[in-house]
Length: 404
Image (cartoon, rainbow, N blue to C red; front, top):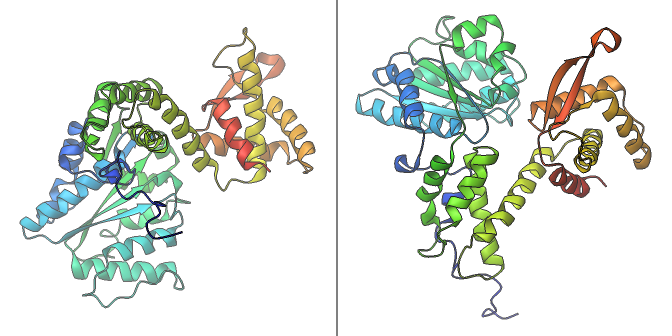
């Protein structure tokens, strides 16, 4: 192969700045669409921080892809800039609690985020106690900052409330002398607060905001704001409205909508089409759903997948039955019976019914499954039904790739 062989695309005919369509890309102010009121309310809650005073602690709820993390990061970044103009030293730290779910991991991440070369304080990745991480964090905060905002994304994934207790009461407990801390917790679980320790709840839940799903008009604006990711004239007129309508009808999730737009462009690339056509949107939607779900169950245990396979098979069979309701759920015992058959086919010993109940709860926590309690009267007593929230055909395809 010579150097002149076209192994790589030297000039992308579809994308000019694909980064605008990446999920982790933080847009500039003009690109944040449909969340003006939420940004205003959040800024109002933390506004005392620009004067070196204590920001309110905030909990933000909402479904995935409703702009919670985006707005929290944007407001935090703006607070740091504005505080600097007022002569106040401020910073913000971001923790992905799905990745750093233990108290030690979370405090290490915060300390690493806010540390500077001026402190001469070493924050190792591991090897010291949680208490030592805290001591070093408090030293950094008092030495370097007047105010720090800490974003705990997917806060419901924390193993316990210990770090919330430490952060929300650091000043009161005398751990900090001058620095003020504000915590912004972000969660997809509207009932997360019910699990909190009462002492944490009283100090952490000063302000609460709920972010609603985006509607079609907002999704349309969001994607138009990022349309310069493509070369001029590449996007056909119906592509964005079609993607927005699909996403609004199904979930109102901006992340998924942007995924669909990016995948539609990649389909145009792979087929060597000159433009991104509306017909690519449907194909892109199917690919986005499959990739998102594959990422969701990646790393799950074999038995977790067997349980999900049992529910999927029941859901597909029910869909073939014209008399069955579309929203039909299935009892734990129904799922367990089919799960045992799958285990035998796979040559694996089945888990107990209680453990399968726990696995179903884990799927419900990930919003793969919806659980509901029902009463069967005096004869049957109460029981739980489980309904697959994903398209069962999508789940079937993904599981076929992951179950060996």
